[in-house]
Image 1 (cartoon, rainbow, N blue to C red):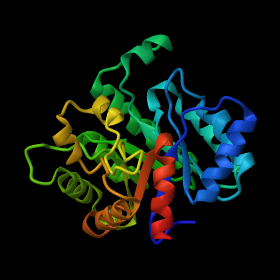
Image 2 (tube, helix red, strand yellow; image 1 turned 90 degrees about the vertical axis):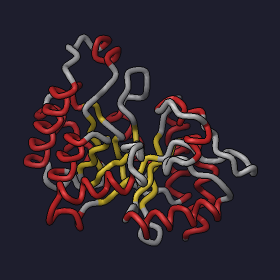
Image 3 (tube, rainbow, N blue to C red; image 1 turned 45 degrees about the horizontal axis):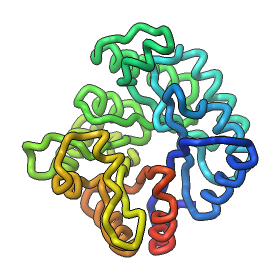
Length: 272
């Protein structure tokens, strides 16, 4: 279902009833989204049961996590649950992993909050275990730091980039991709590069809704508008921007949020 070499993913953040979830999943599949993602936060829908329901309601769209907090799981138990979901969905699982970063969620789960190094070390342990025991399930690792991107480059199939790199370089996104290229070596050409988008226009003005973007980085609105994760203009303009990202950076995979759907549906139609 990929659109001219692109893969479009969307994060689902609510599941009020089974009927609503089925209707939503079918609509997103019909629009042309390639992957439906669930986040992994306490207070949000539980990823595995919701993705199982989505798999039963759809036939082609892939099922993803963006991203599981590796620190919430033991490798063997996660491999069991992920493997079962992959089997029940006829091999449609993309398993996204992250190191976890919200101290309050660890505390609410009655888990110790490791240091940043310990969380990344555990992510590497988890990833190597899953690659051995679920070799046919693509793994996405999302993040920005050097150690995490090194693990992603060496073990993952999909690299989730945030677009927030070193502000001291002329092109932070290019710098992060070059870092991944060097860390991946001969693997690089087989990797899928994904960019998480956090702002698009919500009306015909072409001005992106910056509320989510403001939560992630402390920048002025002018600086936010210059980020590659913030898209402006008409659907045709955004389609051209994504085509430029593909041609310039090799980015072929983009993850959007549920409130972006109406705009991105028009973008997918422009690129189809």
